[in-house]
Image (tube, rainbow, N blue to C red; front, side, top):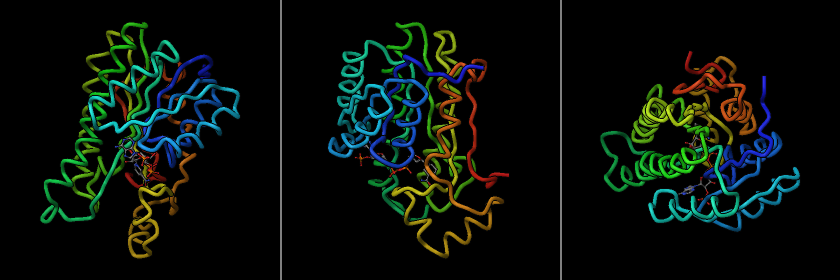
Length: 250
Ligand SMILES: NC(=O)c1ccc[n+]([C@@H]2O[C@H](COP(=O)([O-])OP(=O)(O)OC[C@H]3O[C@@H](n4cnc5c(N)ncnc54)[C@H](OP(=O)(O)O)[C@@H]3O)[C@@H](O)[C@H]2O)c1
């Protein structure tokens, strides 16, 4: 079985902290050169230093991946630097509201859907065109257990469920170009994104009550599955989702 990513090029969005940062370092340790994107370059520079310590190259690019122009600019820069993109990890996402389905407004809907779904789709399309030209690639979408079972974040849940369907659609249509597309669905993970959940004792108690392993994940615990899906170890796997959730979705 081959888990090596030696001499592959991986682009990871939302890689300035949390799961994306862990994925950038983990994919580099598995042998890949890395391009990382998020909106803030100074944060990316710190992660780039960490990646370079593994001996691999790292290109940080500031990009708002809900904006078409910035998506195209990002893909152009990575192609210019490395000549190819073998692996895309669509990890950037947002949830600016805790409002219920009765109260949530259009502005929050647009900001969630524009990044979590539209940006993910069109970045995948732009990268898939490069992968097609170069003979194939792997796309890994970061969904959520909230996309499998609804939770406290209604529009976010809808966006993450749509990410699972986007995974299947892309897998089905792009297999002919040797592009495999899969997803991971993390459970509650200790990052800034979910701090309002794991730092709230009442919410944490409810979440852990539904989680057989009864603990929050560390971002690094998402990396093994990402390496598996990015490598030849998963050579016959496409259109699938791996929940990494301590058993919450059982
Ligand atoms: N943490 C959890 O409990 C959990 C559970 C299930 C799924 N997930 C999923 O895991 C993924 C990573 O989340 P995380 O928990 O690691 O969050 P995080 O630590 O808050 O990191 C989010 C990353 O996304 C970037 N980002 C935000 N908006 C962006 C934009 N418009 N364009 C480009 N980059 C943007 C952020 O950087 P900038 O602010 O600099 O742009 C940051 O690098 C997300 O897809 C999330 O839905 C998380």
